[in-house]
Structure formats: structure tokens, C-alpha cells
Length: 633
Ligand code: GLY
Image (cartoon, rainbow, N blue to C red; front, side, top):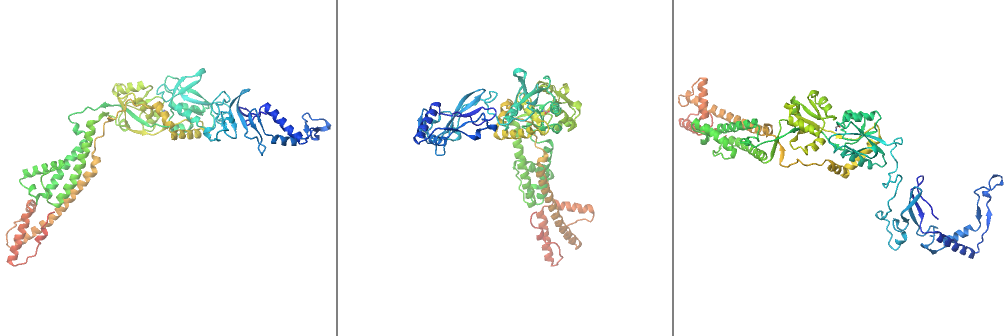
């Protein structure tokens, strides 16, 4: 009573009724027959006319019909017994009570048992009857079978259908790199096959494994093994029908997407500039390094200007800002530079002077803090310097530039950045990079190397004398290339995203590319000095405040002078003496300047005296109200 269930065609898994051995079968039939005869059952056979063939001839497959069959079947279903394998009966639905099956794995013409199935415990590797004493547990974690052997002696579970490729393996071209083999490197394969390893290969195999179907593929190497092959050429081979796909460190560029379909990028890798860097030695003039020369110059000029502005605003009413010209000059210098340390001793009494000073002290505060921070960083962190600051420096010069042979960089530098082809030097191995950079442009080497960040990070991890300068100036990523309209490109993109989301992509990256030999927290490229443009806003505010204060001051002064001048003129014309202003232009200028230089208090007291005189003369001459000139400005 063994039956196979399930799979058609290649039968590799089957179920056999378990426990109902021949002995039990005979014993069951005997018990059922006994009950059958007890019930008056009779065994006789008749010919079923339906079994007759045309012409009255018996069909070969004709069979006898057992007349009491229905009763015997009833008896069998009612039979309950304990066989060699334990209790045996049928349920009211005529199903076996606790049916159990062996799960067998068909291997070639034989088979092997890989476990059991029962409706009590589900799949198990132990016989079901040993589980009947325990509570049923059909949770998925409890469902186990021994390892299955699949066609081709594979123990990995096949994933349904196979990617249709006219019955042949996918031909995958792989660049035969001679450098940076962490990404793609050929290894000796069995029976002459091309075998590869590296970051790109592992990403590919991991992504293929995630596909919901199997993709049989074989790697075919591309390149002579002496120099890195041109990655655009290998993508082009797809269009010739030689490869179905290309796997490797292939950057996704516009030109290449016209020839093949690419997956999502599995690594980002823009172009960077790598140069030799020197350690900056500390010098006696290191304290000047935080600011650029224009910044130093404008800061110095502002100190003097603000000193002069405050002097003008304070001169007429503050004795600290009066005295002989020499003393006043020294006061301006001393006052302005002592604000650097907020240590000025001279008090400011005018409102306008105080406004200008407070704005200036705020500017000084910011300049001070920025200088301190920058100087601390300069003196405590090891500084590396290079005359090349980024791609802009290279574009502005005529020096040779190195690039990696076979990379799209060559075309990019010529076509997109307009660099002359004669300036570009092809470099094959990392040793060539080192050699060319060390020699420098004057000795037949290169000024800088332009290459993708992914390679350069690996390169720099073991060559600390070089560094990336400036920003990544071109962004791209690497992907796998497939023939146009291949469904694999989209499916592998999904698989790559799954790898990325699960963190597997990062693990593969760290396994192959994680290097940290030169990384030092206390090393950095020369910091940019603080430039004037960073402080232009502050200087503008201070300049505007000073300018407006002077405008207001001179406007008020002019009004005051006008009143003073006309009242003196009136006095002169009335024969009262006093002001002696003179009528010429130069005379009026002298009068104005002496008025400006005069202490405000004197002007006021003279006005008061004049008013008293006028009052005593009892004559009303009209004129300025001295009180309007009171108050500081
Ligand atoms: N990664 C080099 C290239 O794609 O050209």
C-alpha cells in the first residue's frame, strides 16, 4: 500500500503510507472478511458487460466485479485493530485515523527517507508515533526534514523556473584587471573555466542569488592580462552578441547606456583629484596664518577708520578726545587698537559715538573668536599642503595629469572639461601612480591623478604621502550591464536594492574594500584661511553704521553752525562786535573749522551770554533758541 504523491516528471520527492506494512494489510482484510461473513456476506464474481469490447471480445483490461464489494468495503472502514505499527482505524469520513507518511527523496532510480508527515505533527524527522504522546506542534519552526538531494546532486533548493536563455548559460563578460583586483580579479578555475573574485563579483553573485529564479551563467574574461582593458570596449561587446552581460567595475556613463541596459548602481564613485601632500611645518609666523592678507589689511584699516569716526563724534564734547594734534593722533591709534582687547580707557559720551562703538565691538568679538578658533586648529592639527587645491587648479594650469588606463576618465577630461589630450598621461598600475606623482610635472611625472574615488580610496589607504584634494567633481556609480531590454537588468536592480536595504551590500564592501591604514583623526589638508568675504557682512554693517553716524553728526553740526553764524552776523551788523567771521569763502571755511574744533560747551555758553545781553538790551532780535543746541549727539 505504498503510493507516491506529488511531483510529476522528475520525481524527486514522494510520500509513502507509513506503518501499514503487508502484515497489517492482510490482518485488516481478514478482520473485515470475518465481519463480512458474519453479516451474511457472500463472495461471488460476475462479468460486467461494460467490460466487453466490440464484437463480444473481452477487453484485455476487463476485470471481474466482486458482488459483495460494497459490504466488504463497509466492513473494512469499520475495522479497528492494533497492527504491528500501532492502532489502526478509519475516521467517520473514511480517512485514515492519524495517517502518517514517509517522505522519500527520489535519487536516480533509488530513494532515501528524509522524514515523515502526519496530520498530527506535520513534517518531522522522527516517526510520528513518538510524537503522539506530546501536544501537537505544527509551527513552521518545528517542521523539519533531512537535507534533500536535488537533480545534479545539488543540496541547494532550486528556485522554480530557470531564466530562459535558449537553453544555454548566460555569457557574462568580466574585465581582466591587472590592478585594483579587490574589485575584480581573475583566479585559477577548475577545468580551464574563467573564475573571478572581488567586490563586484560578490555583489553580482549575491544579487543573482536573490532572484526568484535560477540564472545559470559563466564568466568570460576580457582583456590581455597585461593592462586594464577599456571598460567601454567590453560594454560594446554586448552589442556584438558575444556577451549577454558584463559584470565588473563598470561606471554607468551616458555613452555606455546607449549600448546596454544597466542595473541600479551598487557603489557610488565620482571623480577626484589626488596629489602628493607635504606636511606643513610650524613657523614663527604661524600666528598670521588664520587670516588671508586682504583680511588682515581690511581689519587693520577698519580699526583706524572706527578710531577716527569715534574721534570725530566725540571731539567736541569729550575731553578725552581733545588736546594737541599729536596727542589726539595717538589717542585715535590707542583707542582703536585697544578695542581689540576691549581694553579702551577713553569713555564715549555722545550717542552716535556709542552706537558706532557698540557695533564695532561686536565685529571685534566675531573676529577675535574666529581668529582664536582658526589658530588653535592650525597649531594643534597636523597640516598637509599642496599647491593643487582641486580640479580648478588643474584646469588653470598646463601640467600633465595622470589617469587610469581603460577608464572613462580619459574621455571625460577631454570632452567635458576641455583638457588637451597631450596633457593626459595613462597609468596602469598603482606603482605607476606613485612613480608619476613622486616625480612631479618637472621630472616627467604628473601634477595630479584624476580617477574614481572607489579606486583612490583603496590606493590612498596604503600611500599616505598622497591625498584627495577638493571636492568630487563628477558623480557616477557602477552597475552591471545587460543586453538591451533584458529583464535581468530590472530584476537585478531590485535584488541590488534588497542587498542594500538588508545591509548586505555594506558588509560586502567592508569585506573587500575596508582599509584604514592612513586614516588619522589628527591629520587634515591645509585649512582654508579665513577670507575677507566671510566677514564682509560684518564690515558692511560697521561701515554703514559709521557712515550714517557721521551723516547725522554733520547734519546737526551744520544746523548748529548756521544758527551760530547768522546770530554772530546779526550781532556784527548791529555793531555788537563778537564773531568776526570775515566775508570771503576761505574766511567762512576757517570760521567753520574753528567752530567744529571748538568745544561744544564753549559754543553753548557763548550763546547763553549773548542771549542775556540781548535780554538786557531789551531788544528782541529773533534768532536761534540756544536750548535747541543743548544735548549731545
Ligand atoms: N571604472 C572604470 C570605468 O568604468 O571606466
